[in-house]
Image 1: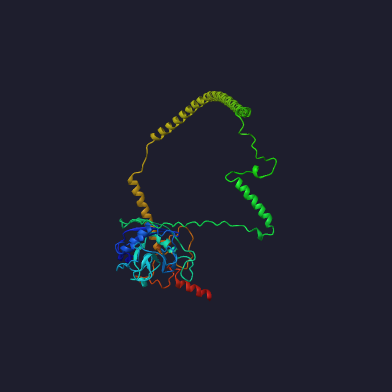
Image 2: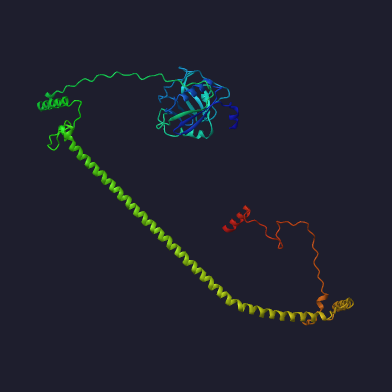
Length: 450
């Protein structure tokens, strides 16, 4: 597989497609297919592919998209007309993940493109290869293959291109086109007044009278706001205002004074409530402070009491130690006396043993002793060689019997063998058979069947 990548030329330019299946990175061969790459990059910069679907999908073959109409019949190039095919000897349909232009014939390239899902040699020299999918995003591209399709190879739930982003632009001179199409203003048609025909109704006369009354009221109050005071016949709801605004200011003065008094009273009540709350807060703070002071005093008293208790305990411990120290001193003196007596006896014993001379046997005496033992052994060996009794005589069970000394050990002569055959059975050999050996397993199975 690596030889395929070695044969392909280096890329120049990168575009990111944000799809519903995930991000797809596309690297471009802008030198080998300049027109196709320029067309694709400019359409991505203009957002031409945003919201378009992948309208055609053949499993193991291709996934096609880039049509704004979504049916495979639309799409146009940036040149205003279809541009020519661009083939290259090093770009071949031999693997998945290649990006190529879709067309309906020779030199008929627009905006539609497709991804290859495998080797497609039948498309060689028919469609222009201009890019490839790179990195782990190829697995997102393969997700486009998943799903059901109808008879016309159209996905039932097609994936969509959400947005496009040019990460590396190989054509810095590209400028996105400005949309010049303006929405034409449609002149609004005047609405024709519809005349009601009350003659068709069984109660047409009554309806006509009601309609006349409604029209009269609307003309009367046209441009004015209406309320339930004006429309309802409720005696509790009057359209006359409670205060006549057209009265003289002198007549309005008592009403204004009464309003002012009510406002002043409400303000005074509010201020009183605030002062009461402040007093309560002050009282609460004082109570808290007093409680804190009391707690501080109680803590100090506790600390003093604890200190006194510790001092008393120390005094008691000191008195106990004084009482115990006196007998300890007497015991030490007695032990020193005992130790002195023991040492004196020990020194006496040492002097006694040192005063005695050490008598060691000389070397001459020791040699004589060893020679005596040797002569005794020789005489016993000579006696054993003599046959004192016949074989028919009863052997004595005494401990002084030395006939065993005349016995000689003689082994049979055997032929010297350099190597032993491991296959031949012998009593003095270890069993070296492996129970896991297949031959031994077969033998055990045969023995069981018998």
